[in-house]
Image (cartoon, rainbow, N blue to C red; front, top):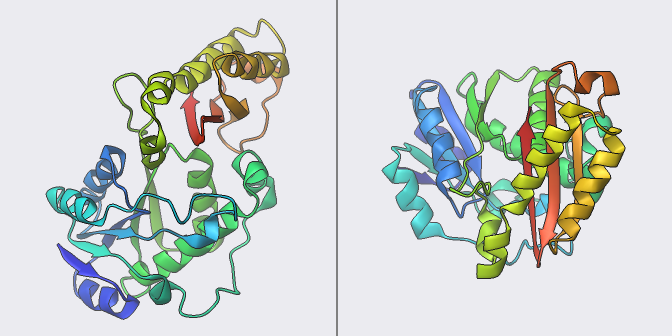
Length: 283
């Protein structure tokens, strides 16, 4: 596996290699990330992963400085999956000057759910992803990018961005990787202590319960969402949201959609102890 740090170095490594399949990450890799690399191996001539902890998507009170950085282990894991090129820019490589031009996503999609609780988050995500896409694909004529479905709203925002800018990139979604008890794999799971880890499965269970209740339609959706929030609070969580939305636009579905097998998704974000986790369930 070739490790590159600067954009010119990356582009030189990609020269004459065909179409890249690209997996952007912030490091601290787990099997969810590695499953995306395995997907990428099937969709490109050269497999590229990046590791970059993007300051632009962290709010001032969030964990940018303490975000887990596990460089040696990450390199070993990527190499074990047959990754061809690792792009690991330093901040000065990706942002050699203050990033004053930024990508502002559609507020109708980006200012709800995660965007409501983390203002500016998706602007930071879109800006760094656009810059990573430019680094990887600008001289290759396009290719494939693979993102995980755990970050459901992020995946939708990136797909819309690619569509709006007519980027020659095929965005592929990888299924959420889970532990045996149902907890979605996440770099932030490492923050959980033993007791919190034991109780962390409650988030995915709450989403399943909410989805089942929504399909039955025994009560208005708002009431079911409130019940789900209360049930999670009773287990010591601090939920930001547990909600059912249309898969197409993440807007609230009409009540008629609940019993008509419309494609829906239950999404949740909640804090257990000091750790904020997100998850989702299509149904």
